[in-house]
Image 1 (cartoon, rainbow, N blue to C red):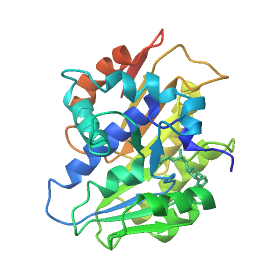
Image 2 (image 1 turned 180 degrees about the horizontal axis):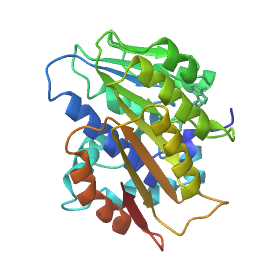
Image 3 (image 1 turned 120 degrees about the vertical axis):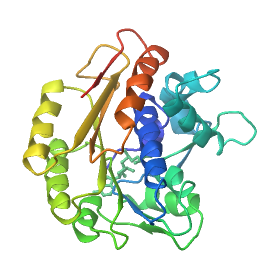
Image 4 (image 1 turned 45 degrees about the horizontal axis):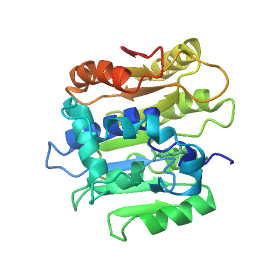
Length: 273
Ligand SMILES: C[S@@+](CC[C@H](N)C(=O)[O-])C[C@H]1O[C@@H](n2cnc3c(N)ncnc32)[C@H](O)[C@@H]1O
C-alpha cells in the first residue's frame, strides 16, 4: 500500500468525485429518514496544501484552485466550492476535505458515517481529522471486507462510496464484483464508484460486468482534462453510479462542459451516459 492521496487531493478527479458525492448527500437529506454512508477507502480526511506532498505534486493547482474564485459556476460546482470553503474560513485555499470530512460535515445527527481506511498512518490521521461524535465510525479495516460485512446498514438507506487506489491490476474488476455482491444485500442503496480513466474499453468492460452482476439503474460521468495517456499523471476520471439520485443527470449535463473548459490542459472533454 504505497498510494498516498495527499499527492492528488483537490485535483480534477477529486473535483468530479466530491461534487457528485455532495449531490448524493443532499439528495439523501431530501427525505427525513436517517441514512448511512459507507466510505470503503476513506483516506486521511484532511489535506494541507502547504504540506510537503501537495507542494511536491501540486495537482490541486490545476484542480480546485482554478475554480476557487470563479464568479458563477454551475450549481453542482457552486455547492462543492461552498463545502470546501467551510474548511477554509479565512477564504484562502489551504485545507482540502477528503470524502469522510465532506460527509461528516454534511450529516444530520441521526445519519451515520462508517469510514474504513486500512493504512495505519492514514487511519491515525483520519481519526485526528474527524470530530469525535457518535454518528461517525472510523475503522482500520479492509474496505472490501467491510462491503460484505456491513451491508445493508441498519438505516436501510444510504450511500456507498468505493474509491480504491487501483494499485493492484485487478482492482477495477474487483470493484465490479464487490458492487454486484453488495447489491444482493443492499439493492436500493446508491453506489458511487470512482475509477481512473485510462482506457475507455477497460471501463466499458467493467461496467458491463457490474450490469451483469445486477446494477440496473446506472449513470456514468467521465471527465478528462487532456488527451488520454497510459503513463504519467492521470488526466481523466470516471464516476459510475448505481441507483443515482433524481436530477443528477441533468445537473451533470450542465456541470461537465463547464468543468472540461475550466480545468482543461489541452484536449479536455466529457461523456455522460
Ligand atoms: C483514493 S484514496 C481515498 C480518497 C478518499 N476516498 C477521498 O475521496 O478523499 C484510497 C485510500 O484507500 C486506502 N486503502 C488501500 N487499500 C485499502 C483497503 N483494502 N481497504 C481500505 N482502505 C484501503 C489507501 O490507504 C488510501 O488512503
